[in-house]
Amino acid sequence: MSDNVHKGHRERLRKKFIDEGLDALNDHQALEYILFYAIPYKDTNPLAHKLLEEYGSLSAVFDAKPQILRASGYSDNVIGLIKLIPEFSRRYHIDKTENKSKVIDINKLCEYFEPRFIGKTNEVLYLLLLDSKSKEVFSGIISQGTVKESNVPVRKIIQLAMTYDATFAVIAHNHPGGLSLPSLDDVRATKIVTNALSVVGVELIDHIIVSDDDSVSLRQSRWAKQGIFIADSEL
Image 1 (tube, helix red, strand yellow):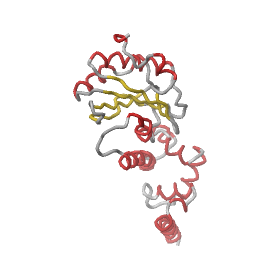
Image 2 (cartoon, one colour):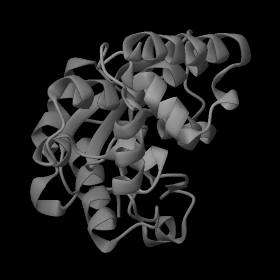
Image 3 (cartoon, helix red, strand yellow):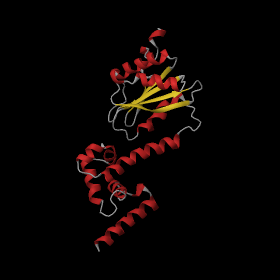
Image 4 (cartoon, one colour):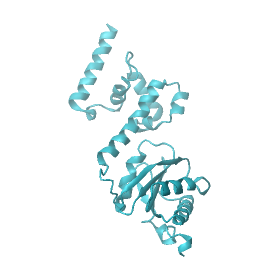
């Protein structure tokens, strides 16, 4: 009897989602439904409530770090599914909005980078390389951790720029859970990359900083007036 009631509940919730969409479910029902696929033979309603109570919101559950979830006793099946959702969301958004011709509008770099940081709970540094016609020749994460002068992978940036015969470069990183305002470390790192790339004839055209729901272009900020995008050799 218990199994039949439980099965009936799952089927009703699944049908409601399929027929009416996720907006028809409240947060704990949505999380409960997702957890069906990690825990196929157990009532996931109590677990959904526990996760929301523990982390405070649906987004906070999905942003929780795997090691924290594991330390709280959650199984790898649950952790894997929870972390899959924001990662798939990021991949879906990028694929749906990506310019298939790969020609990048340098006036819309914030729009280009924002979806690439969806679900990223640690700081990562992104590099975008363009040819002389602003066509993308490389785009990817090149390091993880706080962006400071001491740990910017300058050699890797130069190697990639030369490998892909780039003319222009853009770097971007995130401030998870913080503001997109540039720090002095961000400004100093930008200057270092500007000078390094100028040696191989590549121009750094911007440094984008992304927070949870905002982004800032250093070139369009007051810092650009300090000459951080001008190589010292050009002064």
